[in-house]
Image (cartoon, rainbow, N blue to C red; front, side, top):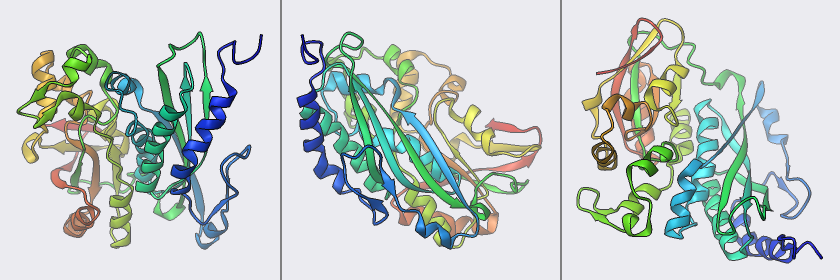
Length: 341
């Protein structure tokens, strides 16, 4: 008896690392010390001496049951973008710059080419957010997970000068809410999506005229990364007063998280066009509108609060980052929460 006969192939692990090295190298920043394969990722923090009061930010998340689509479609090159996005967007939401990322892949069996393809997506997400992929772990779990299954999660660390933290404390009545478009469902609500649609290859390969693509293509579209958009706003000299990453729990859970007491966020549902994938989900699942807004991003991946005089400049900065944005509402005096009208 040996480890391979027990279900863990160490040689496959070595091959995975060799195959992913080329993707990892593309994410390197000058601050990264050493290379892939050490026991810990090393990152030089000398540059933060230029900050008055540097504060480290961290975020960890996964892709939820969206990985099920990757299994069925046998498409594994974008799910890593989702894992990175879910972490770095949270860091950007607090005003921070993501510095480095680590991934964790648990699998039933290590297929080196598949693992390398997953990490290729992780590296792409890191490149989009200018975040270094400094390490990770691939763990085989024979007997615990089916051989073809895997789960993916990640952890990111960022930094922000204390004076630049976005905490919502200065939000007041009259401030304007700007929504930044999502790329689709992102990485939340897939347990509901999988109840609405028959998640088979045939179903996911079905073309819908209203989508202009197959169902699978619409659902697996990677989560939009907003690091550059928020960085552009800051570089334009504008202050984001509050920022909400619209993830699990949709608008009703996430928008209030950026608000101080006695601030009511009023969002106009007709201020932007809801992407057709959400209409299709609601129709096929007979899902009430309130539940849709309480589960999905409904086409807005982030909502930010701005002083009215900063709106035009901030929106231009967002657009220059390649994102689409809309004025979607405002802040009123009232009980802390969100009103959709």
